[in-house]
Length: 83
Image 1 (cartoon, helix red, strand yellow):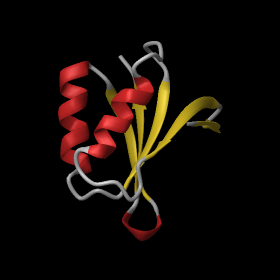
Image 2 (image 1 turned 180 degrees about the vertical axis):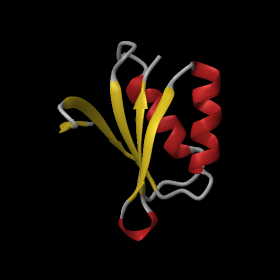
Image 3 (image 1 turned 180 degrees about the horizontal axis):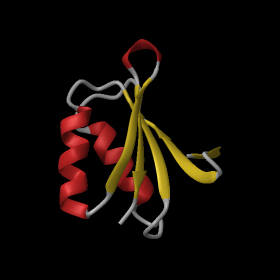
Image 4 (image 1 turned 90 degrees about the horizontal axis):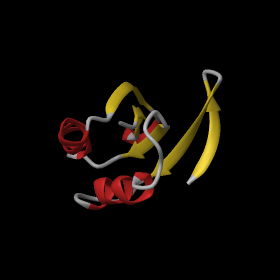
């Protein structure tokens, strides 16, 4: 996990590119488990079911998807605010 400045705020980056269901969501859950609420995370995935799985996780945990950007080669970058 790395930190990067996005729009003036620090964000943790979790790269799950190349992983397939359920590994991207499991990686996100593991790496955010000890982070405080309000922490911003950028989650990268190219898993076709990643969007649906991430929305379900957010509904269950209270996390909020702030935005989604399409990157190269079918990679999606999600900005998530942790609950």
